[in-house]
Amino acid sequence: MAKLYFRYGAMNSGKSTALLQAAYNYEERGQHVLLAKPAIDTKEADHISSRLGVTRSVDFLIPPVADLRALFAHHRGELVRRENEALVPEADGRRTDVACLLIDEAQFLTPEQVDDLLRIVVLDGVPVLAYGIRTDFRTQAFPGSRRLLELAHSLEELKTICRCGRKAIFNARLVGGRFVFSGDQVAIDELSTERVTYESMCAECYLRESGGRIDGR
Ligand SMILES: [Zn+2]
Image 1 (tube, rainbow, N blue to C red):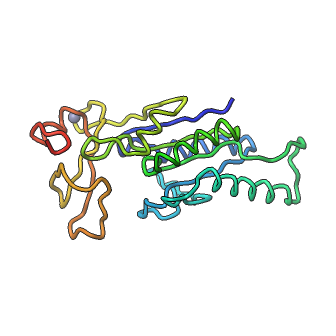
Image 2: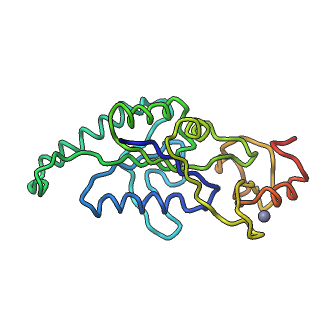
Image 3: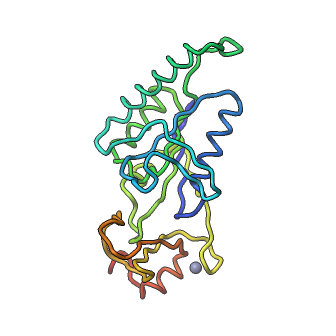
């Protein structure tokens, strides 16, 4: 039975690397996957890049208002048509289909689009692997991640290490090299003259830097 998987972690926990590895594992067995990501993430445009240097184009971007189930059905149909027109048929005569849908930056999906992921899994029978960041720099869940935590059949935490050696669970924001603890959930780089960066941190280090404040309070 197909399942909805949410693999979450702090920034720099290797989510894109894990996604690309999962895609490779399917394809090594001769299966087909579709890769997608929300269109809100402009920094990598239509690519998924791992910090290890592997980069791959997505099959489709998901606009904020898109009907994700319909969008998936369209690209699934295109893949099936393309593969069935290919000169070399599947060796064992199986009908080509999408074995898995992989989503990068899933925190930027809308809750409604996450509902669609569950429909794709249960009603359309295609497993979905969604990778994303659990919380923003204020420790608030991203809307897409919150819905995934509610709906996913399977949750898996991808771990990364804080500067102190503990497991990092938060993402502290730095603007021009200084920590900030209030602001918009998604920082638009172009609007700031100073560079916005993030550091994955454990709760202890986060609260030390914030002076005990959580979500600006
Ligand atoms: Zn720490």
